[in-house]
Length: 428
Image (cartoon, rainbow, N blue to C red; front, side, top):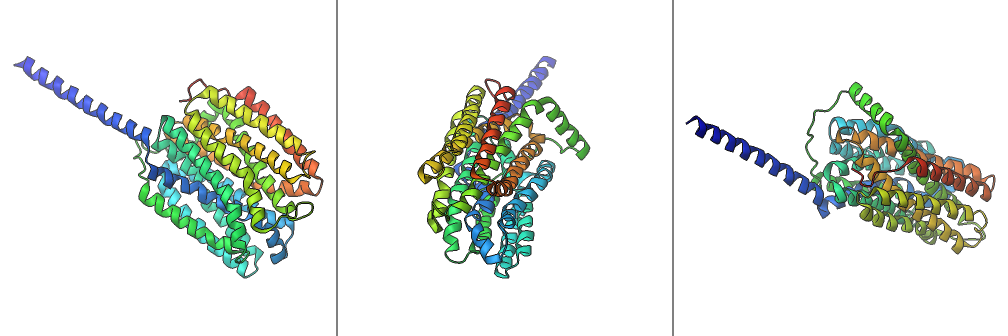
């Protein structure tokens, strides 16, 4: 009798463990597949974010004329947005770990769009001050968008699907960079400040997609207290800082160069010997970005969790950036050759960024992922913030000064990445 009861208990226990294992396998399977609708919704978040800067770059020279401001003041319209985002991204990251990702993304999209309307009215009133304040508010909204989306991808997917989704977010980011100068130039044909009023439309699309199409996984653990959380982050940086910090620097440099070059091009294309204006100028600005977008998507799909391949691609990408930027010191008067070299540099960026995204996201536990990816995104935004004003300052020195500086920085970063970032054969 006792033996029969024992067998029943063992059977119940075995069935329970089998059910638990089956449930766990189902969760893993769902995390490894991903739906097209989810990919679309996630992709709208970085797309909205990048429009915040890239769509305004073609109209910066018009702002100088219409608002009666200097070239340096026009660069602050880009810089203040990015600087505010850089400051608040870590806070948004902590809040997303403390509560959940959508609870941060959704209010951020609302603030982003509303501040765009305010900036538009500031332009109508001819008030540079209102525009600058609005741009700071937009930066605050931006802090809770794409950086948190990277952590959300890590929560929702695993394995090759995670790499593909991260590659898609980088490609979406790049797609925004490609189409936004063209959109900005087209909208300027209506009125120069029309781009500001376009922000809430894009935000609304992303808002609807995030609310209805993304089902965020439930948290498996209780959120940590702030002191424990900061301590955990410190421990991660102590253990992995030898490669995390160079990774942060490399991502920041890539976007510093990208947005600095875009600002530079926007200001010189309308002058001799190029004489390119209007929508054609937006199309020229989009060419290097198209190279980056295409390569980003291919790279994100191809690398999966292959650490050896990631290391090769990161170093090749930085070599391309260093050589192409160095050659522009001498070959810049021929517009075709000049844009071709900048496109090669952007292709290098497209090889670098998806690898960094996958390594950083995949190496951190879910509980601290929001903060680490936010620190990374914060430094990327800092690169975007510093690009336009520093390139503007170097423009007053010489063309050679600009490209000597960025090619030297790329070479230094290549050395850092080569000697410090050595991922395992299979990144976890």
